[in-house]
Image 1: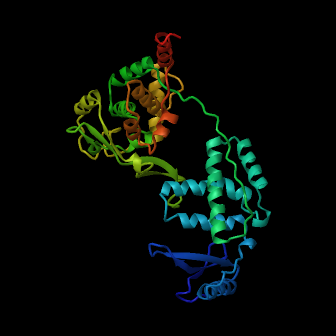
Image 2: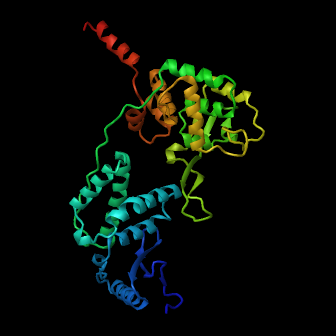
Image 3: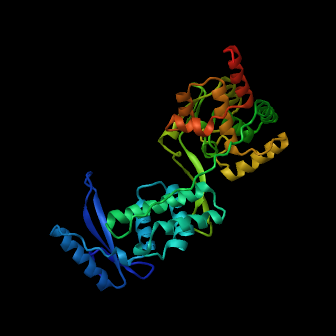
Length: 371
C-alpha cells in the first residue's frame, strides 16, 4: 500500500500513478514527471528507477512505447489545465474526447505515421466538420505529439501534419442602404436589447462582449466604452447537477481584446437617454440578469426578419462596422486596436471588405489617369 509522501495513488481508471520531480524551470518552479503502472508495486519500481537515474545524471528509463496515444493525450491535457483559461481547456478536452481519442486513442507510437494522420483528417472532413474545426483538432493532436516527443524522446516517429486549406468565403456585409434600414428599425420603440445591438453595430463588439457589457463600463464623461469581459456558453466539466453546459463570464479573447473604444457622438447621445437603475446592470437587459449569446442571436434573427434582411448573423455587424470604417478613411492601426486585434493584417484580411460601389469609384480614377 502507498505510504504518505510517496506521491503514489490509484486513479479512477484502476491504474496507479506516481509523481516525481524532474527538475526546475528558470523561474524556480518545480517541474514534475509522471509514470504509470497496473499495480502499486510496478509503478513504485518505475519511479525508483527514474529517481535513481536523475540523481546519477543518467538517462531516464523510457517506457513510453508501451503506452497508447490516449496515455499521452491525458498527460498533455492535465499539464495544460493550470496554464490556460477554462474555455480553452474545455475546447481542448472536447477535441480529445469527441474526435482524437475515439479514432486514434488506441494507436501505439511505433504504429503511428503521417498516413495515420492523413486518414484521420479525411474521416473528419467526410463527417461534415468544417475546415476550421478540423484544423483546430489537428492543432491539438500536434501539441500532444510535441509533448510526447519532449517527454519521451525517440518514442514517436517523425510525423508530418498537413492542415486542410480553407476556401475563403466572402462574408456577409450590410450595404449602406441595409444598414440605414436596420438602424431605423432599432431606433423605433428602442428597448435595452435593441440599444445593445445598435451599440455593437456602431463599435464592432463581438457577441460575447456585448452580452457581458455592464453600464459601469461606459463613461459618458469621456464618451468611451471599456471592453474588459466576454460571455460564452461552454461544456460543463464540473459535474454539478445535470447541466451539460454553463455560462462563463471572463477575460476577453486575448490581451489586445481588452480595450477602450471612443463612442461616436450619436451613440453617446443615445447612451445619455438611457437611465440605468444601477451601474452593475447589463446593457442588454437593464438589470443584473444577463442575456446569453444564444438568446441574443435569436433576437437578432427576429429583428433582421422584420427588416427583410437575409443571411445576417451577429458577426455580420462586426464585419459591417469594419467595412464602414475603412470606407470613411480610418487609419488601419486605429481600427485594428478598436477591433481588438493583435495585428493589422487580421483586420485587413478578415474584416475589411470593399463594396461594389467603392470598387467602381476606384476604377473611375483610371479615367483621370488617361486609361
